[in-house]
Image 1 (tube, rainbow, N blue to C red):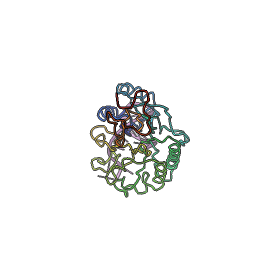
Image 2: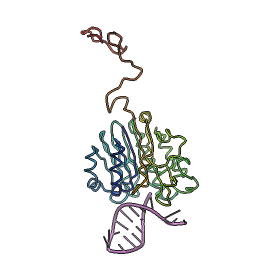
Image 3: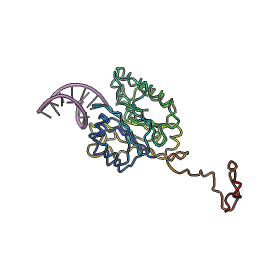
Image 4: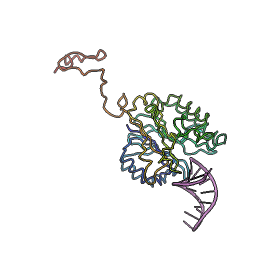
Length: 299
DNA sequence: ATGTCAGGCGCAGCCTGA
């Protein structure tokens, strides 16, 4: 199962980039942020194109700002808009949607920016993250939290820590709030796979920041342990940030092995359980041989 | 060095947000 997250910075503007990207990368589940469209408008713009590609969509949008979505072609059950108990500013904003896709509870989140440390919006950001943590703690064992967290987890996730000194995204309280979210049992699957690499997901449009690779890593794929154990690849699709009319964020992609209980396909015997040889009567101890047909494996 | 985008309003160019 291929899962991706992408802050598209207006889905209306990004249609010419999003559709070819879906066709090229063929993700099974896509978490989108900053769609900036009400749900009916998004359906009008993109509904047919998504359906033609086999995607169902869970939407939580609003007309001007914010807006999140989950696209899935491995099922989309129990859709919940927002994070229960999360604060608004002052009214609830369209910053989260969750659904069960292919046996995993998937959250697409757009964490508040925070604007300026100490501002009401900054307090809002911290409180919103606390509500998200509580939600994850109550959730099932198999969870993915994907999205734009608007926090660089560590100095290594910023091209130059000094460039952002005193600004949001790098302050200690924000990082502590993210650490508390992770302490709900979430793994940062890209950083765990690339512990020493320069990995960014966002580059400011201005001043050739992308060309100079002066960015930040603020878009994360976070997985609970059973899901993290299935990760076979996790990477940033920098190609999608290049060329004409890109978002200022690149997608993050994670490939998962089939779940051990076979939610998405046939059960494959583990290597430690060799197939019984024809003509023998050897059976696993826990399996009882049928009595009426004689020894198993013989015809 | 405040450099680029996007939405809204409303039809030019300013305001807000990131």
